[in-house]
Structure formats: structure tokens, C-alpha cells
Length: 414
Image (cartoon, rainbow, N blue to C red):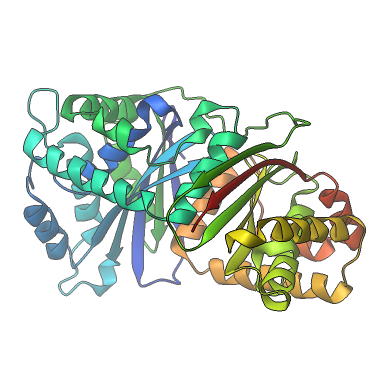
């Protein structure tokens, strides 16, 4: 339902939860120039407002709303940078005196968005500086995580697009360059220029929700979102080795694939990834970790929006070449059809079990509504399960031939 041009209201009616949830989502460009500002905006949105100028006052207000919880989340989908405000609260029928809690929650959301804690076109410096320092400390701590840092290093050498080389949170240097003015001005850009999706999930009066949401002073905007990114295959594999005084070495491999979200080969790609490295019964896990004892941890992940399939492994540095050989062998075996029907069956069972379990998660239902709207595909859980079940061995082999190694990063420990 359109609230304004570029502002969409999604009503997700369900009685399966005792709580309702509102997610207010900003979707903008994923760019080095603005990523740190947008994350700092997310920090401020969950901290204070004009009426509740301290974190203590802000949290007390949430407690007064029957213990409602508010959080913000940053994510990416291809070249789109997303900032969510999530508010979870009990349904009106569970309040002690029949209060209209939904109306109070939307009024609180209005306060957060349109009466932020500002002082002359910038966030109040004292609160902002605390949030900025906290976030820098968070990023500094992440640098010490070998898997996190090696994942970013792999993206830096794999992607040609400079915006995809960085984390969804930016990096310390980018955050340090921002201030209360630049962050607040970015928030104004988000409020007036971003695509906005508002999700209301749970049990409520549709008509009243539409009335209240239409009262938010949201203006028309035209925002083009670029979700899909596909870089051309290159004949040369990029490599980078770094040394760090850590006990475990990390091997990260980036493979390209030309399959986008819900292409005809998409479901075969999902099954391929499942039997390659997504589960404990997968080939990488059973062959390299269980049989050979060469990996502390190992697995694979796919991104169908950027054409990336990643394999990661925690290993001893002396085993790097052997691990590489065995990973290549697993890919080769699948391309040659050297895997059992039982492995396919087990993988499909795991994928379907996980999909059915995910359908009971409010945030998953919200993501599905967002994807259905923006990707112009309405894929029910039942249809998704049916498409997974239809994947044949030949389909998996076909997909495997399209997956090609493009980059290798090795963090060599002691």
C-alpha cells in the first residue's frame, strides 16, 4: 500500500505471535562515502530523541510501553544499504487496561523520526560523540576477529566495485571522519530521499494502522535501488597472503557464479551449496574436517545478489596446499557427478526443515515481504519447498560447472 511515492506500507496479518512488530526500513545506496554516516544514524535512532534526550530516559519510555523493545539493524542486499528500526511490543489485547498500545508505539516512532535530538542542524554533540566512540571500539574489536577480517580482505581483492570491498558498517577510518553534522545531514537525506518500507506484523486493526501511518509527514521521493551486481569472469585468480601472530590460519576462497535470486538455476545453486559446504553432512565438512582432520572449521556460503560463492576454512598453515587440493577435488567431484542420491536427499531435507522453521520468525516474514515487493516475485514457502524438491542431480552438475574460482586470501598464522 502506497503511503507516498517511494514509501510503501506492508501489512502482514498473523496471530501466531503474542507480540506485534513494526519495522521501519530505509533503503539507499551502499557507498563508501555514506556507509559510516548511515550506521551512526542507526546508533542515534536507538539512543535518544528530543523528548527522551538520554539513553536512560529513552529506555524508561520503552519500559512504560509494556516493555517494548527497540533496536536498529544495518544490512546490505547487493548494492543497497539498509537501515532498520525494529519495535516489538505486546498486542493491545494483552494490556492490563485495554490501552491502545499500537497507537502509542506509532507515536513513539514518529517522535524518533521527526523530533530527533538535535542542536542547530546537527545531532547533540555530547550524545553523538559517545555513540561514535562506542562504535569505533566495536569496529576495533572486530579487527581482532580473524574470520571477520579475512572475509573483508577476500571481498577487497574479489570485487571490482569499490563499494563492495567494505563492510556494511564501514571501517574505523570512515567513522572517524564523520561528525554530528554530517551524520544528521545524512539522516535528513535518508528521511527524504531513501526508499522507505514500513512493515506492520501481527494482529491489529488494519484501518487504524493505515490511518496512523498516513499521518507520518513522509514526502514523495523517487529512489532507484540496484540490488543485483554481476562482475565479468576473469581468467586470472587473484591471490593475497598476509601474516598475523594468531594460532589459526584462515583460508578464504571466492568463486563467481552468474545466477541471480530466483533465476531458473537458483534452487539448484542452493542445493549445490548445501551439499558442498553449508551443513555438517556436506562434502567439505565430512571430507576435510571429519575424515582428514585438516580443518578446525570449514563451510561455504552463497550470495545470489552479487554472484559470489565463498568457501572458508580455519586450518594449520602447513596444510594450506593440501587443503586447497582437497577443496578443488570436492568441486571437481560434483562437476563430474560423483556424489550420491542420498547426499542430495539429506541436503534437501535440511534446506526444507530450515525453511519451515524460518517461517516462524517475524523478521524472516518481513524479509520475504520486502523481497517479494522489490524483486517482483511472490514465492511462498510451499512453492520454495516444491522448487527445492524438483532439483535433480543433472541440475546440480550444471550449476557446478558455472562456479569458478576468482580469488584466494590466506591469513597465515604462527
